[in-house]
Amino acid sequence: MNTIDPRNFQSISEASVSVEIETEDMTLNIGPQHPSTHGVLRLVAKVDGEKVYNVEPVLGYMHRGYEKLAEVRTYPQITTLVNRIDWVAGFSNEIPFIAGTERLMEIEAPERAKQIRLILTEMARICSHFVFNGAYALEVGALTPIFYAMEDRERVLDLIESVTGGRFHPNFNRIGGVKPAAGSGPTTKKNIQDLPVGFYRDTKLAMEKVIEAADKFQNLIGGNEVFHKRTKNVGVLSKETAEAYGVSGPILRASGVKSDLRTQTDYLPYEKFEFEIPIGQNGDCYDRWDVRTREMVESAKIVLQAIDDMPSGPLQAKVPKVIKVPAGRTYVRAENPKGEMGYYIVSEGGLGPYRLKVRTASFSNVSILPVMLEGALLPDLIAIMGSLDFVLGDVDR
Amino acid sequence: MEDFLNQLKEDFNDVSYEFETILIKVNVENWISTHEILRDKFDLKFFSWLSAIDWDNEVSVGDKPKEVVNPSFEIMSCLSSVNSSNLVTISTFISKLNPSISTLVNVFVGANWHEREAYEMFGITFEGHPNLTKLYLPDGYEGNPMLKSFELISREVKPWPGDVDVEGMPEGFDEENS
Image (cartoon, rainbow over all chains, first blue to last red):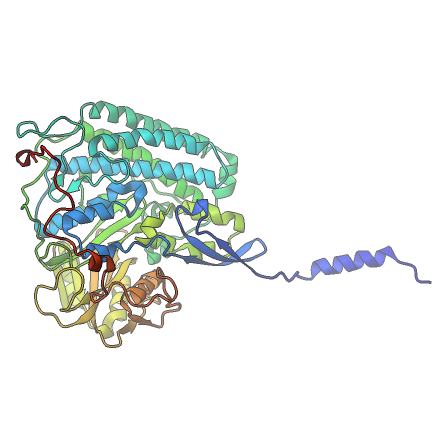
């Protein structure tokens, strides 16, 4: 009679472990309505167990065809469209377009208008980084920071609203200057509308709060061990790859490149102010978070310097009543919260551009996803994706 | 900036500087080699964007070109440097009949998505592209929306910009104070 020898079983189970287990590849569809995709990005990920080995982003769910629409709009109408490209920092989208149009028309905006633009664009940057801080912490599993971030962002949004009348889509820039501010009394020829009453005081208070908040995030998020475990040495991006893909902004700086268009170009008078350009060393998710959080402090410092040193003068340069841009072409780029945003304007002398190429930061930043996610662990996918801080309106245009 | 421009002029025949933007016009045969030279010799390693312009005398949207043009596609790309403020735009013209050009993916990997966008929007073929499929548009979409001959349907239904505003100014609005 055969007896069952338990030792045989032991050897069998040992043998089966040493043979590599063949697992079937799985295709995982993430999005387009996934909350951590900041809009409607769809990722088709091929996973082998816990490892991701191929990711294909699928775009187009937010494509609104602004480049085509711009061809049937007049120049002043286009600022309304471009506001909606990166809706988290709507104000900064207008700047390069207006700067490009002014360059083609050879109009210089007055000093005061430029400074107001600068203040508001830095405020938009702060808002964008607040959203990132809250959302990113949420994505890697911390629920609390988003409540702080949204509360603190509200103060800055209120300031933007008090000047422009709009919270997300200000449409405040005009060719040759800025629109007279909202809420600052009636317009008469003698009393030109300017910044609203109490703006200086409120800005100072709000910016001090921003610096405080950034400090709070450094403790609340940066001091969290789980956050370190989730982000350090995860999603490392090398300088060379970033450059070749056209990755810009805080992501590029986190990889150790000291590149900031605010100091490299002259679309706004940043040379008047002292600020640091935070850079990272490793180019991992933690550095990308850290660079953005430090940038908030620098932006607040710029705003504080700028309101202390406001040039006086008009808000508008002299512009013709019907805006016709002479034939020519120019490319203007700006350092937006998410990276390099630029407009290539081809004018044929008409009321609208013949062709408007919109270069958005998130488009190039997201194109790096397949490279970064190759070989990553599935739980890291969200951590890496979130650290890129993209907005789908900015990807799809 | 002056030095950089002079250096470029040594290597390329048609370099212009207008409205603070450098434009290098090259022949389509030199499209790839130009980018290689700019990347290796001029340290322009940052791939900013690539796109196309549809030059045509018959347009269904927007304004016509000021002068009569030779119908063609202008392929544009933009390179810059992360270490300085140097930036160049490169342009080349290709024919509208069977439009195709070599892909830049082997020089700058970042060109991948930009070329896919130009492919679907203008119908330009990028030879040697690893994955030349639609980027934004849904499968089965016919036509190339960014062509000047492609009509904007909403404009067909309601022509605009018109002569009058969509609605009148509110009552009591004083034009003097606007």
